[in-house]
Image (cartoon, rainbow, N blue to C red; front, side, top):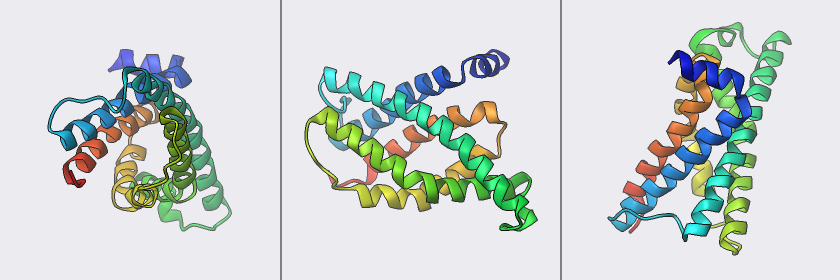
Length: 175
C-alpha cells in the first residue's frame, strides 16, 4: 500500500486518469455483460478505447472536483453556514459527499453523457434522470465512505465504486 500511496502522491492527475480509465470502463463492461448474460464490451473495440479515454478525462475532472468541493465545504463551515458537527470525522465525510453529489455530480454526469454521445455518434439523453437518482441512493453513501478515508485513497475508491454501480445497474436493468 505504501507504493500505491507514493505513486498517487507523485502522480495525482495521471493516477486519477488511469484508475478511472480502467475501473470506470470495467464498470461498464460489468453492466453490459450482466445484461447480456455474457462477457461483452460496451461497444466496438474503437468505441471501448474511446470510452477508456473518456473515463480517464472524467477521472481528472473528478480529482479537481473533489479538491474543490472539500474547499467549498470548509468555507461553508468557516462562515458558519454548516454546523460544526460537519467539521471532522464522519460528519465531514457526509457533508463533502452531499455537497459534491448535489452541486458537482449532476454536471459531471451530464458531461459524461456528452462524452458517450460523441463516442457513439448519437444524441441520447435517455436514462440521465435515472443516473441522477443514483447520486442520492448510491453516490452519497458511497462517497461518505470515500471521504472518510485519507485523501490518497479517495480517487481509487471512487473509481472502484464505478464497478459496484455497474454490477448493480447491470443486475436490475430490464434485459
